[in-house]
Image: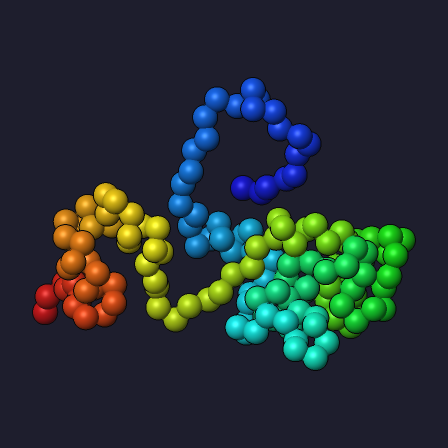
Length: 147
């Protein structure tokens, strides 16, 4: 499944909207790169940190048609990926559409499914909210196969 940007969508163009969970494979397919550092912006240069939460290589350039290192500037280089910094020369508005991913060592529970009422995860597992909270915060464990 790929996502393409369409023109202006009128409200009369569709009848329903369906939301569903994205599988790990879907997330990796949509991702433009892995976020490796928790840093956001360099305090001296005010530029996004490489491989950080605002990385230009992953999410796109901060300035229109300009790479991070400044080797490529202007619209004539549109679509080129800089060989020095790895940033694609394109519009800055792509940062609103692009998504990165973070690989975690252990699975985590998303707060929307844990704190929502009714508690969907608790309902699926047959657990009360208090018991589920203890499992989520590693105070208790669920034994699937005793032995």
